[in-house]
Image 1 (cartoon, helix red, strand yellow):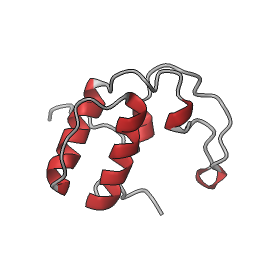
Image 2 (spheres, rainbow, N blue to C red):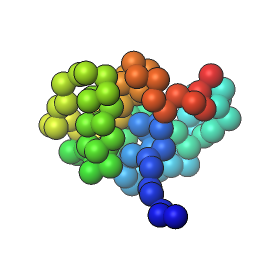
Image 3 (cartoon, helix red, strand yellow):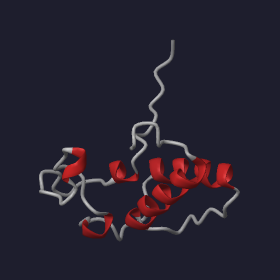
Length: 94
């Protein structure tokens, strides 16, 4: 059995750094650790390798173009869009 690291299905997971203990208006999930990508302190940095890999997979599955120049915040938003389009990663959502 091999250990495969699969990214969480919520694009917000990929935020590196920042304060993960801030309160969020999204109380329906019962979490205060998810921040809006527009509020990330590192959101304007280039997307992470994990984001790039996952976004490429989602783009291919959705038949959508892949933009390798996205920032962390924009990549997170695009991941959310493509998850809804493909249905991938929505198993735990309402």
